[in-house]
Image: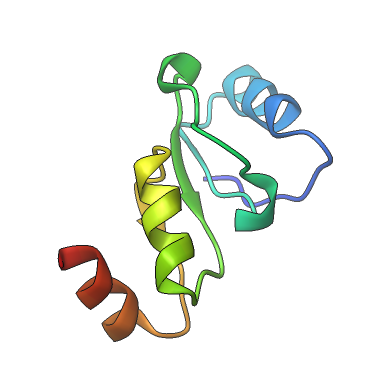
Length: 79
């Protein structure tokens, strides 16, 4: 698991693969569109407190979300 900030999500994916990590958890503000399924890593993100942003991220391929309001986010995603 790697939690990092960088200017480039592509650079972080490359770094993850180079050092053998299987998951990448960047700040959600770094994710601007669908994530590459062929990247070879799973994607999580932090800290997402807006339900609409959580939905968008899940649709783009994020598999885990860190939030300050898990009840709100999980209820929204279940609807």
